[in-house]
Length: 200
Length: 200
DNA sequence: AGGTGTGAAAATTTTCACAGCA
DNA sequence: TGCTGTGAAAATTTTCACACCT
Image (cartoon, chains in turn orange, purple, cyan, blue):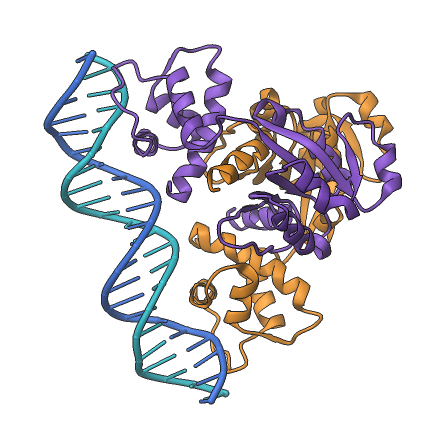
């Protein structure tokens, strides 16, 4: 598997490529480095890890690089995704349009509060949390975004994994535990603020 | 300065300590490791970097460790914080209660759309984006959360920095550039989803 | 006994310099 | 010439083992 930091940077590079693909046919490692805030040799090493080769003196062909990255990052097909917890944050995520473009189809939302669920003006199907297990299974959801309060995050994660979810993006501050083989990424806003302040 | 990874883990440890401080007086490196999903010696090395010393055989005294961490992470006083961009995500962030408890006082919100601003049911003062520069300066805002669309993120960041902001949490997918000495942390949801899927 | 603190080893990541290719 | 690809060096981070303290 790709080194963690490399995979993380490549995920960002992929996004950068999408935004420049309309304007430029080629991009150099130096240009990418400037946008990404790293150095050109880091970019080349990262891309080197993909084992695609033989680019000429103009830099990387944007389309080619983009599709190679898509292959390695397993972004060649859309992922069936759900959002658990439809508070303000969860609702914002449910409607985040960029996800669809990026190949993450949000196919369901869940919340413990049915009243809240009914009031949502969204086209995405929303369910009560008590249906989490069988809906996740029947809809073959593979990726889940957790936006529930800290106290219920672990329980939700366990249910998700038990019903086939392979990758979890966790917005709650809970330190969730998942079995080996399940991918987890924590986005704890408060911890992020603390960290950024510590870097001043 | 603390190594980046260490600072990141310590920021999380600090959060964990807050949640357990009611229940336990002491906590061992092994217990912390279990919660954090790392190993006990990583925890000890990280805490060792704080240069606070001489803990007995019961583990770390939660209160003491917590306040030492607060000192090193510069969390000994509240930070005046603003949110720029009050779409769904920005609004969710504006109302995110955990920030207040963590010592981040949100003192202002900004949006380009005044109608949207007026409709908000919040007690936090909201302003039009054209006032960003002088309000940030007059309110002595030090920390900013960017939740504007990709296209305007860099401009907003530049204005923020020019008016005294020292730390930025960026929720937009834009790869923002800031001068040396300004702390920046990117939380690109889409890149995070891509990354987590690549780890499956 | 039961924990921490830490020097040293191992592993990983970043940086560099430059060969090699179009 | 102007770029990539990459082996080797440097730096950093993680892991380990164990001395040491209460």
